Length: 201
Image (cartoon, rainbow, N blue to C red; front, top):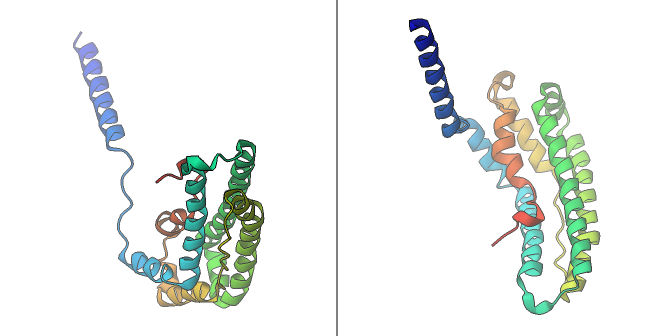
């Protein structure tokens, strides 16, 4: 009888502990001042500022389509725009995911250190391909539907961005201070385009 009570007590304690852990949710990522400093410098580059401006303008256009009830927009055209935006979002995510994989790979980071200009050219091409699709399939058609002039934005070259990666890794012995997961959470994920439904005021 005592053994049975002990088992019940242990089971209850385990369940209470599990419930407590679930209620707390995932533990926050520990602060990394060196990575925060590095990310802060990256976010001041012309490329990142321009990329964010392009993303924000794209999402603002979605808000305009959603919010102006007086336009009486053709719903078939809006549905096509949703598809084009989703595909644009996917294309930008592919580039960001590739960047995430490259930065998580120590061997690739070593190659970036040796030839940052090569990676600059590669990612410039990838980003501009995604932007060209978004310009042609979403922005131009959205502007026509909204009867407004476009706001062309050019993505700037990535030389500065990858030079900063090289500079950072040169300063840190054996890349010990480079935390790819931290960079993904604090820098890459916030760059992503929101889904159509998540674009709100």
